[in-house]
Image 1: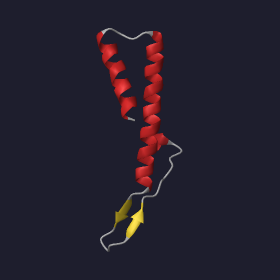
Image 2 (image 1 turned 135 degrees about the horizontal axis):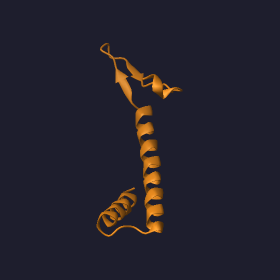
Image 3 (image 1 turned 90 degrees about the vertical axis):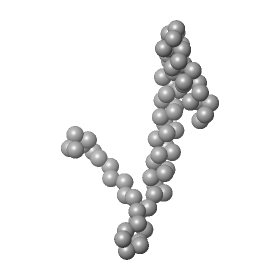
Image 4 (image 1 turned 180 degrees about the vertical axis):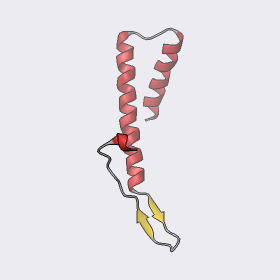
Length: 73
């Protein structure tokens, strides 16, 4: 993961200074997508193992509530 972030940052810096070639832009997009996939997976795993403690001391796991229509919020 650290190497992935390092490469993403290198490409971002290069983009700001001298610009990227077409291949580098494709690589940057692919690396960012890979990073987001890993991040989401780790975050989902963390939430799956998170428990809420009520005032009476009981622990309850978080419940995932899928949203079919995101515009309802």
